[in-house]
Length: 427
Image (cartoon, rainbow, N blue to C red):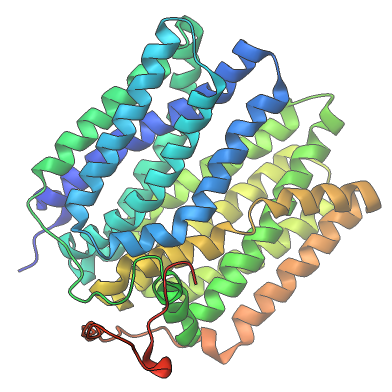
């Protein structure tokens, strides 16, 4: 008989570990740019913090998946937590004594991004060993609910602590990382890939996750359309709504309400998901998300009411969160254990790479054509994506679990024939 998740000791520890780490990370994510703005008065330097963080994540995401498939995952998570703790503690001490140089701030931003690129795939690899396949949908939903709650609460708490003293948000993050390390240390399950092949930074290893995703039609179609196309268009739509309902920057109430509704929708979706087993209805949820986004864009093109726009965006984000949980659960189930880290990082890379360009496209459309046409053109992109997911045969058949890779025997010392030569690091 399968143990319920509430009785799964290791899952509870993983859940608590992530709560402490994410909550602390959300506090510092707000406090870092505020600190730079306070110290330098430069909005450009404050914005550089976010640029460095996003850039570091995109650069290290694929290597992070490779590392997560090479090192015992519980140990790797502990190393990431300890590394983050050392960096954040250094910044806390510097801020407390009134001197936080810009290079140290950027180092903290970059280090946090790099370590999270390794930590994330390691968590999913370990969860694969901790949670039975039949409970993966519920477990993923509970992790998402935890993360969305921390994203709502963290910035508020971080801002309040920053107002008392600039060092307090970073001290709180350091405490959270310490508690996270302790929780991970108490996890009994071990998880390590059975097969290893090729240098860590070889082209074949870095692209192994992407190659796996490409070879399975269902995963390929959903990620390209739902992960790339829909993420891009939805980002453009929400940025357009933020600009339009903020009256070009003259008032933040309408735009702020829309963004708050997006966050509330994500939290609602994460709370609803465990009750409906999203992994069983992943395709239906993806279709519902796509067509609700089309309806939202069409509605906002003709109704300039922030209440309506907020409600539509909340609905879209709620459905999107549930659908994403269902897809992620399917992804974890069908991926062999030896490739979980690389496949998860590959999927995250595809979903993240277009996100910075959505707001840029929304702003360009709004400037060139005005609000109605910006929403209409974004809706056309969303409609094309929805049609592909609805009609494509590859999106109708959910993927089945794949066999694990056979271990590759290392080549003997000496020259290797050209056709059998392993890719060298940096290829």
